[in-house]
Every structure is written in structure tokens, then in C-alpha cells.
Length: 331
Image (cartoon, rainbow, N blue to C red; front, side):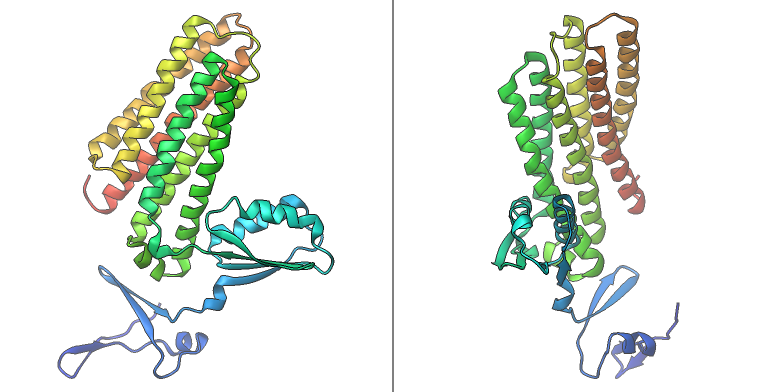
């Protein structure tokens, strides 16, 4: 840490000298433009943006298809605009997986392709993106998936199960985009200005979207479990699963409304109380399940676990709301 004294220049302008070591590290010269970001009692100084920072070239020689997918995902969500994947030999084996993976991410397009190189570019413009609306969309899709997945389980509707599974890709795409903007904001301060969000708000949306993405994952899991049942569910368990599934979704709705809605902090407390009550009810139901001789009870147990996890993810969102309120001293 270094300290500086503010000086008054010309009777109206405050000036502060910059650390010489920092200035040398970024090659600062007289006349260079610096960006200033006031944050209450803090002001952040950033040098002019280096566009080359958002460009990268990765050698994927000897990469497996899984490694290629992971690499593209990491580069996209970290925030790179231009990705060049290169190999010393023909890329034909990985070209298909590169194209397929690029299509999984919003705004990522193939710019150029040769025998040994594929260039991808993100066409996303932060100024036209609404992180809040994208989070709302994730919530809507995830909860719809969850409701349909439970219907699939009870009615053994294979077509509906397939629809649920397909929708998970939409949630993943939206979450990857939100994560991308959040990661960019950590090294590019102008990102939050273009998104018209405070850093703390962007963090809240990213955290909420992550929990909602997990809700969607468990909806997909329930839909997959449905296909494994060979016997119908006992009638009393049908009622219990429907009731508790609805309760778990309601917790998620309550919690999310405190981040992307107008709900007050009391709603977050109610969501957490409801989560605890539902967790206890599902624990009792699982205990009853093990005490009875029910066919495929292990599949029912996995379903109950997914309902518990769904409620927990809602609770995590509510805890984020409490932390935000504490930070703003609005508890």
C-alpha cells in the first residue's frame, strides 16, 4: 500500500501523484488517458484498454475432444473476444467438435477456418446485453423444466422428458453468457458501465443465475430418472412428491424475487424458513421410504434428494439477498 496527499491546484482541482513503479509497469507516458471509476469512498484508476488482452491463441495439438470443449468454454466464459485454435497437423478430427461447441455459446461464431487453424469470435456487445433479463429468463426456464420433470415422473411422459432435457442447453447458454460478463468485469472495469450495473449487482445476478442453473440440472436429472422407473409410483408418494416439488419451486421463486424483483428482505427470511421446513419434511419422507417395501425405492430417494437440493439452491439465493442487504445496511 502507498499513501498520497491530495493537493489543490488552481484553486478548484484536486491532484494526486501516481506511484512511479505502477506507471512504469503499464508503460504510462505523458498525455496518456486514464479512466477513473468513482466508487463511494474509493476511486479506481485503469489504464487505456489493451484490445490484444482479449485475443488468444491456443495450441490444441494432441487435445482430446473433451479437452477442446473445455478449452473453448473456459476462454468464452473468461471473456475473450477472439480465440484461435491451432495445430501443427490437420485439424479435421477436432473441427466438428469445435463447431459444435461454438454453437453452445451465445454470440460465438466461426470467423475463419483453415487446415491447421480455426478462429472464433464473440459478437456479443456488452452495451446491448441485459444481465437482469437473462437471469429472469433462466428462472422461468428452470422452474418450467422442474415442473415438467415432475409431471414426467408421475405420468411417464417420454416426450415431455425429452423436452425438459433439451431445455437444459438453453439455461447453460444463458448462464455461460452471464458468467462471461462477470469474469470480464473483474479485469475490465468499463464492463459494468456498458452493462449499466454496479459490480455488486452483477455479482448478485451471476450468483443467482448459478443457483438457477443448478435447479435446471436437477430438473434434467428428474426427467432422466423418470425413464428408469419400471413401476408406477405409489399413490401416496405421488401426492407427496407433487406437493413438495411445488414447495421447492416456491422457495426458489421467493428467493429470486429478492434479487430480480421488488420483494423485501422479509421474503428472503421466509424463503429460508420454508427451506428448513421442507428439508425436514423430505427427510421424514425418505425415512418412511426406507421403512416400506416399495419397488425402485432408490429412484424415489434420488428424486427426493433433487427436491431437497432445489430448495437449498433457493436458500442460497436468499442468503445472497441477505448479504446484499447487510452490505447496504438494510437488514
